Length: 503
Ligand code: GAL
Image 1 (cartoon, rainbow, N blue to C red):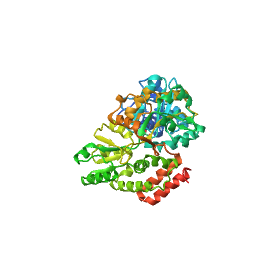
Image 2 (cartoon, protein in one colour):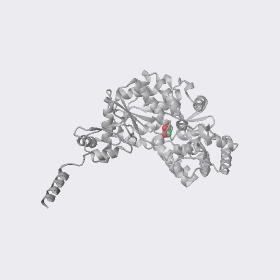
Image 3 (cartoon, helix red, strand yellow):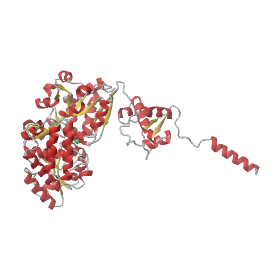
Image 4 (cartoon, rainbow, N blue to C red):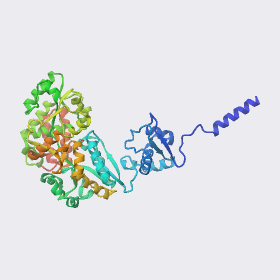
């Protein structure tokens, strides 16, 4: 009995004093090799006792990677691979990091190169967009290898999610080094005189006034200054169609709205979704409508609607709304759940025949390996190029100002634009890029850009100030469900009045 008691005491003491293989890291942190089925929060839970502590592991690993490339570089917290070597900081280090970590600042998850970081903020996460951006990063990295580039994206087409996040950072005095900005009136929404640096000196030193076409330069100037260096020109008004579906049905792309609806009927009879949209971002239907508006009102009247020269009570606005309403009767019913690229799968899968979307779709199709597509201007817009341009701006408080200046110079350079645009699905903002680098669609866009009437896109920041874009977007989004032509026309006129452009 006594013996048994002693034995039990020993077992109990061992249980109390000898920990069962502790996962806690040593005081100075430790290496960890990723195994199958691992993810960062699981590792954080096991070693730091807190699944939310994964950013500390990501940051520590990325910092190690700068000095020792045997450590992984984690660019996406959800993608770690077996065999990668990570650095798990000590609990104290992790806690110190988390005390200052701000999830809206992805740069905190990366180390700093010998020459600091370059934090590039954009909404380019879709196929084609991401590849184009990587092309620019590669050119930058080849020139400035000691700078750690941080790809600070906020997903969501057309930047409607990105912009409020960026604005908050600007106002807080905590901006990224550079950010994506549409050429045109979008800049007004960022109060550039308060928060941005004018880039006129860079335009002069890089000869950019000679490199870009005059119309684009005019669009880029706001309050007498340049606030962004453009990387590209995109076209909003393209009707993409599935070539096999059209060929099998003996159809050709519609040139008038009557043709369009006849084609829709023929496609419907074949059990194909005639017209495809994804409207989950809230900007895609307004995008389609700007093209219907341009195709119905014509280039001059369309421009007049945005300059205030033509009131929104003009009959062409009602006519465009009627047309759009009819188009919506041929659309995929799951459109509210899909993004623009999500909707593009209808074409890839041969289930949908036509989609109106900007020519980043060409970059996306390329990235998806889809080649069975044709393109045409949407009805009424032959000879009209609804244009927009992406530029990069320099916040006044950019933490790595020199790196950001070097970045916008790369953005404006021939080398940068030739690396970016063929993948992005856009044409160069510069006039001297080599056309041979571009696919057939983009060569056709270059030809059209040279001769078409150029009118500004509203959804993509060229035509109107931010509050007007929001009102326009909200009115059209409501219209998709209400179908109220008269009410929507009144709301559009009111939006123009509120923006100070109409009486
Ligand atoms: C536009 C932008 C394009 C493309 C598109 C979809 O606003 O200018 O570059 O990215 O959004 O995200």
